[in-house]
Length: 136
Image 1 (tube, rainbow, N blue to C red):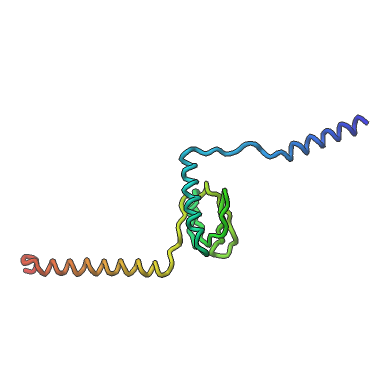
Image 2 (cartoon, rainbow, N blue to C red):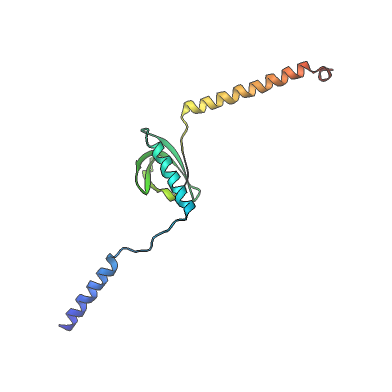
């Protein structure tokens, strides 16, 4: 009888110890809390438009590209572009998150740089044509 009571007590004690969640939590500094709040605000702003393509720089140096799919209280999800599945990213791991530029934006940027470069060349040619000693 004593053995059964001892076994039952031991099993109950082990169950209690394994079912209790660890109480050790991570505390953040004020700067980290501000960074997390900024990241949450940026993700919330990006999630307003559907099918938003994002590039996420993580603290470890890793880069994640894909569609912003779900936004939660402590993390958000990105459907990775190369069909590796959905990745849940906690806000505290994010170093930077930006919207991926569209093809039109890329073409526009190339066009602006091309026009600026041509303007610099024509301006230099004009100034050199007005310089008397430079032409001799």
